[in-house]
Amino acid sequence: MNMTQIWQPFGRRIVAAVMAIFTAVSLTGCNPAMLESNAAQVPQVVMSVLSDPKTFNAVLSAESPNIFGLTYDGLVDENPLTGEFEPAIAESWDISDDGLEIIYTIRPNLKWSDGTDLTVDDVVFSYNSLYLNEEIPSNARDSLRIGQSREFPTITKVDDRRVKFTVPEPFAPFLGATSLPILPAHALAESVETKDSDGQPLFLSKWGVDTPPEEIIFNGPYVLKNYRLSERLIFERNPYYWRKDDTGNSLPYIQEIVWQIVENTDTALLQFRSGSLDTISVSPEYFSLLKRQEKQGNFNVYNGGPSYGTSFISFNLNTGIRDGEPLIDPIKSRWFNDVRFRQAVAHAIDRQRMINNIFRGLGKPQNSPISVQSPFYASDLEGYDYSPEKAKELLAEAGFRYEGKRLVDSEGNPVRFSLITNAGNKIREAMATQIEQDLEAIGMQVDYAPIAFNVLVDKLSNSLDWECFLLGLTGGNEPNGGANVWFPDGNLHMFNQKPQAGRDELTGRTVSDWERRIAELYIQAARELDFEERKAIYVETQELAKEYAPFIYLVNPYALTAVRNKFDDIQYSALGGPFWNIYELRLLDAQK
Image (cartoon, rainbow, N blue to C red; front, side, top):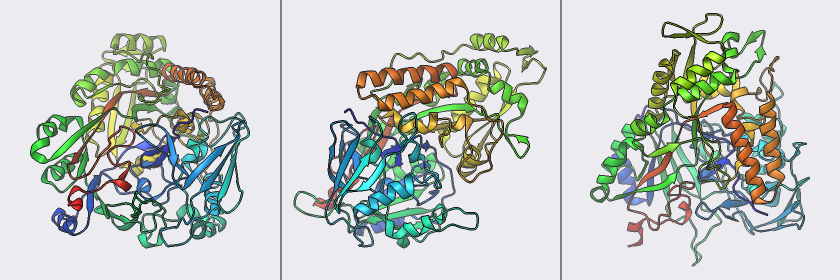
């Protein structure tokens, strides 16, 4: 059985279509000198992120970056260098001959960060009461649905060390589907069972960013020690973490990790060059500068090749009505739902100019929803070539015409719509500006507006009142992790989103035949155990996604990271980055 990674939102374990987007905030009260002084006394790594975290609840998380790659382990984990799954909380597993059962044996003497025993009961609770709980919205749940019936696996306790996962039919991503973080039943069970005045589980408000860190319980290499809004997060090593080195010493070696919250990438660059940051994600505009300064600055710029994420624009295809009002102006909804309109936009965007000018040549056109480095990527899939002439032909076929240079529809309505993206990401803002210019060249007026990340997420998930957005999704080797992007009732079926749990229902929402077909193919691929057959199915999904263009894919940049030369044995990969094995990295000075 060929098992590869399921998409997750936890550090390098990247969940089903999690958004790889950051919000910009002000950096106040964070004194790098103070951090350097502290670092001289405590083995410490200092990094930066562009945004405050949205939640400290791993099940409810729908953003990247998040803290959970540092703070939680699952039953298994994927090695980003080999693509193979390795033991984590589970020390071993047995897969039945028919592929319908996996029995995991968890390690003995596991502990939570509060010293409480971590047991099989926590595993059963995490899946049955959290990830598979219909009352709790989780991006992970859709990736656990199996077959045409959309059934979930059955999770049962075998004995004090063993837990059994059973599926109703062969499920190729089975092993990877069990890499989700395990959470503590003794701390969370009551909040799942107790309801608020609206009948919702109290768990939905459990472990928010206002929760004192000492009240949150973890099982990963680090625990959250301190969080100061718009300033920083500090993590310290978990004294109860299960990993040990070959001589029996407890891991991790590095005692503290600091995430400075920095308002934009320019500021982060300045802090890295001044020495107050140990690592930085390298934007294309900074690459040449940093490469020239590697020796002088005592750091190395790593290039992992094409990144695992995707970037795209999408139009709101939702025809739904809420409280008597359509989500989208019906005039614009007719435009957006005409595939020729979307294809015309795809032909009008000059992706090569985007690569040359914005990405400084450090990227390639992205044609597919599946990661370029995934073995299931359709490498021969042709994207939309840049052709304003072809764009105009398609628009004419769809009944659009020109009044002077202005594009209007068949009823004389000028083509004008809003484009939103998250503020603070200079690359993405530059991409949006070029798209505005490219579409203006074919007569469309685009009202571009960068907005705060949390506002943007609310529009996509809750209010659903947006017209066009520019965003990205993280990815992995296993396409089934993106199932909730393609299932019509998935939590990240963004272009035609079903209301989330607890939100007012819609009337008039329609699902196209091609949407259903892609969903059916994802189901078929997940039950197909032969690799070549699975790939053929995923190639068809990519062809359909290209033809109907619910997402208009843009550029796949290279995975570039600068890391100061203070760590022993960095093993960089596009999937895991430089710190995927943070639990076993050492600071060089600490070894002297």
